[in-house]
Amino acid sequence: MEKEKTIESTLKEIIESRGIKVSWISNQSGISRNTIHTYINGGVPALDKAYAIAEVLDLSVYDIWVSVKTSEK
Image 1 (cartoon, one colour):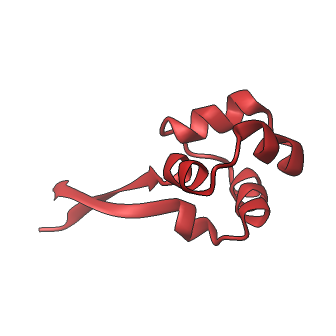
Image 2 (cartoon, helix red, strand yellow):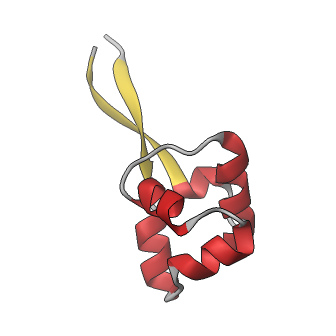
């Protein structure tokens, strides 16, 4: 049986560990604070927005949004 995969965001942990503010990411990336909060709370960004945030944080998209295996199908 195959396990299902889901995407989990580590954005909140990254922000907290670096001591940065959502407003800073917003200013640097051009993405609204509300949209970034959506991503922090589990929303999945469009690819261009994911890359913009990753670039600002000097990380890979895969470092921020992690594929996680869940239950069996």
